[in-house]
Amino acid sequence: MPLQKKRILITRTRRQSSELAAQLEALGAIPILIPTIEIVPPETYAPLDAALAQLGTPGGESFDWLIFTSGNAVEIFNERINRVPHLRDSLIVATVGNRAEHDPFVSAYPPSIAVIGPATARAVQGIGLQVDLIPPSYVAESLAESLAPQAPGKRILLVRAAEARDVLPEALTRAGAIVTIAEAYRNRIPTESIPALQQLFASPGNYPDAITFTSASTARNLVTLLEVTNLALPPTVTLASIGPITSEALRDLGLTPTLESPEPTIPALVQTLENFFAENN
Image (cartoon, rainbow, N blue to C red):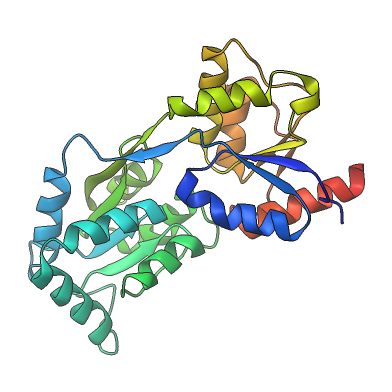
């Protein structure tokens, strides 16, 4: 197997690493889990909670669309609505129970749900809600393009990270939507990963064969952590990017991605790694 005994550094959050690690292990690789990103609460949940209260109110002040751009956003959304049982129950009953007669482009209640890609869709379905729209390409630009025809006059709630790019809300606002951004979490650099990184990059014999980057934040944060320890990424290590946004972040950092997944999903990233090592062993 091309990935047999290949040591591959996974930079995702510890909670999100299991899927990637499991798929790599199944192909004979040795995953090295050192998170360069950690999910922490926003400075305040007040804007999110206020938006959720509004979301649960049928009528003109509610939202036409609810957008998630990550599984983390879905998880925090679910945690917050669980604090208000009647809100969760009414939202799920309305969203699931009324789908047969619900036109997602007309009625403001229940809200239609759009997600960035299939992983986020699975997270939404996992909390009992249904997804109305997944863009053809799993990036903010494609999601904005898919929603733009329905945007004029629509009220949209975007649940996301504090540090997210503004491509999506800006595009939807230009298209005529009224966009409310509710920050569900922040990305923090886990300084507790420094000793493990120091050991990993202490000598060439310890270097990983490849590093996977599954977001722009994982790339930026790894470079920051290495700079703190006066280390740099060895030029011999394969840099595996999950997609164009992550690749752009690597280039902005002065790094050239060795390979880029054809679509921003974990299975596609693993397959791209396998193909690369099959050709370059």
